[in-house]
Length: 452
Image 1: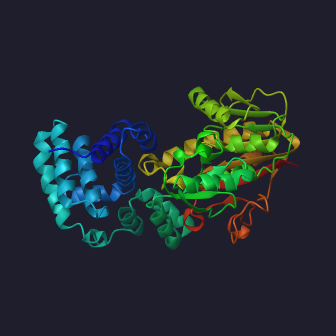
Image 2: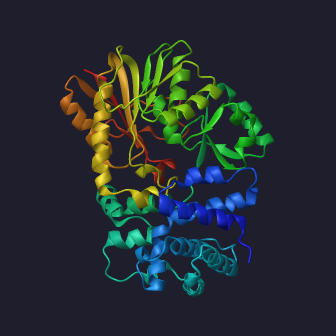
């Protein structure tokens, strides 16, 4: 029987993610070209990201129906079962017969014919129970973290630490929002062009609404922004609102010298370069030359000719002779504030990773402080919710750099959308935090450091 293009694409991407640890967003971008119908592209995207978000619960069902640990199943079979059960339980408009039969056909075509009977049996049982609440299937007496980990499809160790940090109620809210498609926000390079951009959106049939956090942000609700001239010429970029907020915290003025230490993919660099002006010294660095090459094309498209790109390891002593007025250290991190957008992170991250990331972040921030001008400002930021990557990095670095201290993060008064309380974003410690269930953005942390 034929397999729909959407299911075949979704299966191929999920299998590569399982066997090669490839990232779904990159695979979707490369597979969903102009030859794929818009309807198939939308369904493939929904299946891939949905199956990744709900992978833990799907595996719970698979182990329930097979009596086997998922580690004992061939990857091709495991992915086909996830594909089928996800459609049965979460996509009501997909006929059960199509979800079952096409999943079995996929397994047959992967030369796993011996597993076809198993897949059929499991998916038929899953179809019979597709309307049964998962809560009623969880064994009684499980610890709270383990029960929530199954119900909300997150690793138990992460749920346990969030309960300790945020409490049960806020953790439940966070787990729930991580399983919902995030807002697709656009950043406007030049706010003067906002009305022009909105006119182009209307002409292209792009459904949109005002930003939830920022006055100049736009949230795309439907349609294809790639069809607009504003997107093609770099006047707008896709960027989460919390990410858009970070460069504003540096309060860049014309002529300021700038260093963006971990710059790729370049959205924040572009905002900083525009604020500093065409004659300012702007240096953007990254460890990976490939990412810098991609970033160069993006900056060129947007007309940011004043940025000098440098490949270097920011965790080592930096080679710059001059000091910079403004420095951004948007550090590589676990990404636990972006799990709705990057669902596979939750299945790859380990507690040991947090310790290694902390070490790298301390080195990055320490190197950057050595390049800060006497009256300069430095923003350290991450898209992580974890204290090891946020507060603890700042405090550890300042213990070794007595001539620096934190200052309260200052959000420009005209940046926030109406009715966004400043006190909800900047705490008593002066650090900025966005919490996904409350801000409907990615989870970000930011701290400002200055010379004393």
